[in-house]
Every structure is written in structure tokens, then in C-alpha cells.
Length: 482
Image (cartoon, rainbow, N blue to C red; front, side, top):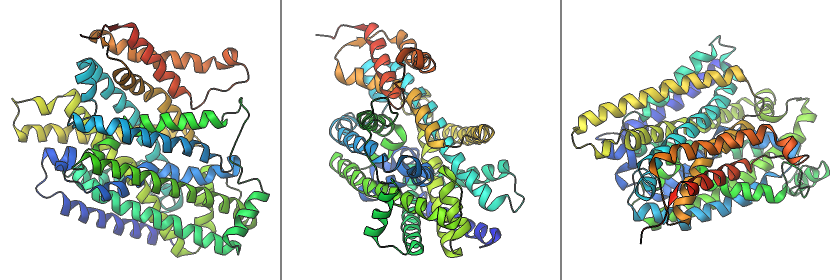
């Protein structure tokens, strides 16, 4: 299919998104922007959160990694499931009991104003860097597959896509995103299933035959028992638990959608449904990765890693499949940024500017501030996407997990201290204790060869960071009140 035809298809899809946004954002208020007026349907939230959780990184990187790591991703997936259960049992009841709009208000209530602000700042840092890295990955693929041939520069592609996202999130916020995420998740899953079916057909194999062929090529291996390996079994499981708890349960973007549901029971059903469906979808992505690894040599495709999936589809498969792939890719792109910009705007407005507590500001004035912050984050996303383009890392999933280790660790430490102890903290020292964790982790990371020998510190960096912040908070703590 010609680049021009693909471009028109993307434009038509975006027009549909705008129609949904217009329909859902009518009569929107600040309350509907932040938490959807507490009227979001839990089934829609659960389905839409699949797309938000997967993003373009999963869509591209998980199948691409099968050639090198087999089905080893299942190890970390086991940790994901346990992490989601912890969110359902521990964190959601806490957020609903306190009737939170921003989850970092919990840190305000429990530890003090500076603790809440520190949590908000690290969320802003982590979500901004992580979301722009995910956004860059998909924008770059769109650029390489369509827009380079049309003579459109990368910076213009990035700017137009962010303008699109701005147009449909500017007013409705969470109220709109609950619906657009549902549409985007549907398109992504249709693309995934279609690509699996067509590649399986091209290989002329049945499901059992394809799994047997993958096994012959070593693609179905799961477990790694070498303690020194970066993908050692228990290291991956433990990392999966803490990644999920930190990057979902302590992340305003993910929890903002959950707490927009009317009741705790519905929010818990939402997370349980997400866990089951997400596990099945990730397994299908791994299976697709195995199929692509089998098909690529037969088709003369030399690409590997993040470039494998787009190279096979855009170079070897029919025009209809290319169109489905592209719409699915765009559907994976938008949840990387729309919910992030909305959640970041909410965090700045609620936690740093304190708009919800400002009785001296009219509703109109609060809306003006919200619009300014929203626009500011769109501009910042554009700058950071250009920075990632300049860096041009070959595997963005590794970059994202590395960033998460540094930026989500302080959130893990803050929440852990609040939940596991009854002690207070000396409020003015909290920022120093929270900042010390990532700095110590960086020093350990760059010197890990001399410190640990052959053992490689990887995903457990997040756990170490959280533990260091927890220890720092303990050092500045005060006895629990009687």
C-alpha cells in the first residue's frame, strides 16, 4: 500500500477519535477532567487500560525480543500477576477509603506536605521520561514506514501527533480517555490477532506445529537458573512484582482511571479483569514473536529486535495487513501520551499547585491554569521525543525499564514507609532522603562490576532504590504518635 494511502487511513482514524472526544467532553468540568466525575464504567476502564499498559513498546519490543530471549518474558509476567493482586488487595482499598483524587495526597495525609510533593515530582519525572520514550518508538516507526517517503521531517511528524493528542484530551481528560482508550485497545488487539493469523498462514503451520518448530529453534525456552544472568528466574519474578506495584499501583496515570470508577468493588473487578486479559494478550505477543522469528529467515528479512515486526509486515505482508498493523500501531501510540499528559496535568494542578484546595480561585481560573499546564506538557513531550531521536537507542524497552528503576524507586520507598510503619518523618528532610536513593543507586550501578563481580544488576535496581529511600526515611523518622 502506498504511503499516501496509509497516511489517509491514519487521518481517518484520528478523525474518529476526535468524534469520540467531542461526544464525551461536552459539558466537561475540572472534576470530569481529573476523575471522570466518579462515573466511569469499570468494564470500559478495564478494557481501555490494556492498551495503556501495553503501549507501543510492548507492541514492537516484546515480539522482537523473542529471537534473543525466547519466551523468557513469562518469568517477569508471573511477577506482574502477583503485583496486580497486591494492588487489588492493598492499594485500591486505601485510595478509596481516603477518597483520593490524586494518589499522592495519601503521602500528604500520612507523612506530610513535602512527602506528597516529592512523590508528585518523581511521578512527573518518571511518567514524562517513560511516556516520551514510548512515544518516540512508535513515532519513529511511522516516520520510517510512511513519512520519510513523503518528505515529512521527523520533528513535524512529532509535533502533529502531539497536536492531535492535545485536541482530543484538552477538555475531557479522564472522561474522554476512558472511551478513546477502549477504541484504541480494540484496534490494537485486532491488529495483533490479524498479524498472528496471516503469519501463521504464510508459514503453512497449525498451532501445535508452530510451537514444535519454535521449540526446535530454542524459541520457547522460559526459565533461566543462572544466578549471574540478567534474566535469572527469581530476579525476574521479584522485579515483575515491584515494577507492577510501582509503575501501576503508585502511578497517577494508571490509578486515575481506577479511582474514576464509582465503587471499590468495581475498581477491584477492573484490575482483576485487566490482569487476566493482559496475561493472555502478552502470551499472544510472545507467540507472534516466535512466528516472526521463524518467518523472517524464510522471507529474507535480516531485521532483529524492535525492527523485526515492522520489517516483516511492511516488507512482506499484503496491503490490508499493513493497514491493520499501522492502525494498531497508532492505537498503541496514543495511550502512551494521552493518559500521561492528562495524569501529569492532574498531578501538577492538584499536588503542586493545590488547585483543589484553592478557595480563592474561581472554577474558570482553575480551568485556565489546567489548560496552561496541559499545553506545557505537550511542548515538553515534543522536546523529549527529539532528544530520544538524537540518542537513537536500538532497544527502547531496556531504556524505559532503566529509567523506571531510578524514577519509580523513590515512590516505592515513600509508599512502603507509609504502609509498613506508623512512624512520622521530619518533613523538611524528606526531599533529601528521597533524592539520596537514586543518587546512591547510580553510584552502585556504574561501579557494579567492582562491587558484584560477575553478577549483573538489572531490573532489581528498582527494588534497591526503593529500599535505600525507605532506609533514608527511617533515619529522619520520628516516633509514632500514641
